Amino acid sequence: MCAVFVILSVLAAVINIWNAVVTTDRLDRTLESVFLFEQAPREKPPERFELPEGDRRDGFLPEMEYTTRFFSVRYDKNGERRGVSVRFIASVSEAEALRYADAVMAGRSDAGYYGDYRYRVYDTPDGSIVIFLNAGMERRSVRTLLWISCVVAAAALLAVWLLLLPLSKRALMPYIRNMEQQKRFITDAGHEIKTPLTSIAASCDVIAMEHGEDEWTRNIKKQTDRLSKLVREMVMLSRFDEAQPFAQKAEFSLSDTAWEMAEAFASMAKAKGKHFEQDISDEVKLCGDKEAVSHMLSILLDNAVRYTDEGGQIRLIVSKKRGKAVITVWNTCHIEETTGLERLFDRFYRPDESRSRDTGGSGIGLSIAQAAARAHGGSITVKSEDGKSICFTVVI
Image (cartoon, rainbow, N blue to C red; front, side, top):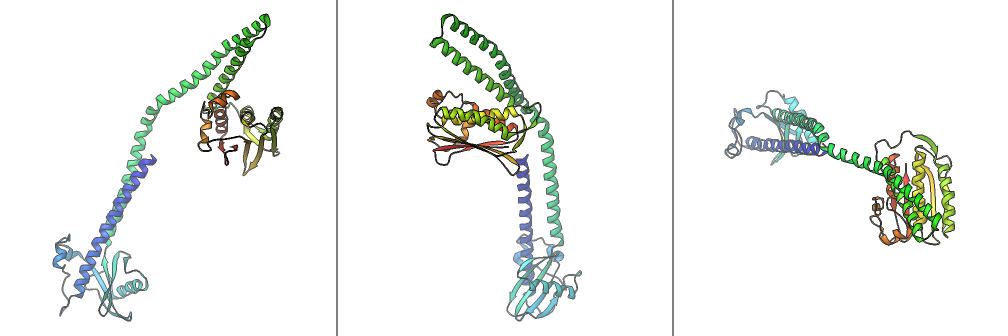
């Protein structure tokens, strides 16, 4: 609809501008003919205005000689009025003609419109002459075309809207149905997969108790836990994609939630030889789902702890700016390519496959963080200024 509006607007503007330019050009050519007529030497005033022979063949209608209405005022080289001619117009008196001409001479333009008159100032050997041409009919024609084109454009826009309203719903219905089926499939499949995963994990525990734990049972438990986590994350991501992901929202303290997460990950970072700092402002509150926000913070902090180099730094900042809650997670790490970092939010995207296998990431965590932020009406961005650190910023 925006594209159709732009096209119709441009079309109407081009038509009206073209019409106005053509009309003005025709009036100016008529003024040139009037000027030649006024300058022609004659012993007695002519009874009617006559177009020159060239103008009669130059797009002027034969009746132009009888429908042209104009008046003129002459000035000497000192700017003093020297004469006025109102022979070819009945609606303007000499006093009005002089007033119009004085107003034009007081201005700086040599051509333009004064009311319903098109005027031009011409230099003559003994001074100057201002000629006013009655353009009321032409100007009304321009305004009428403008009004008609606007009405037609509005009617066409409305017609397109009424046509697209039902058709667009029909066109989008298969896509909407497909998306709903995908969400339903992920949710249903997630619940169905949980049962065999639980059974596999229980059977593995029984085998470990009866025959002792070995590398095979440990690998089964590790992969089962990994698959269970992936299923939970996919179900959660599918829920965040819904129009109403939360049954109800409640106000909670983001500061307290951030402190709880910071304490847990500070210990984890310290155990891995990494420095963890936090700067959490008091009384930062949010209205939403506390569990979802906690999970988002957990993903960002876990991501920082995983990928921070040994001996590196991690910083969590929670503040309130301009009525919005701002969460910043910064950590040092080596980044080879600082452009296109937005792809980190793509599902199952891994910039470094070998490193992702070492850290155990699934490539879906940051997608969940982004979906959680958007579900709360916020946004999440990522940047790296020097290639030696990375910063995730959530604004809600």
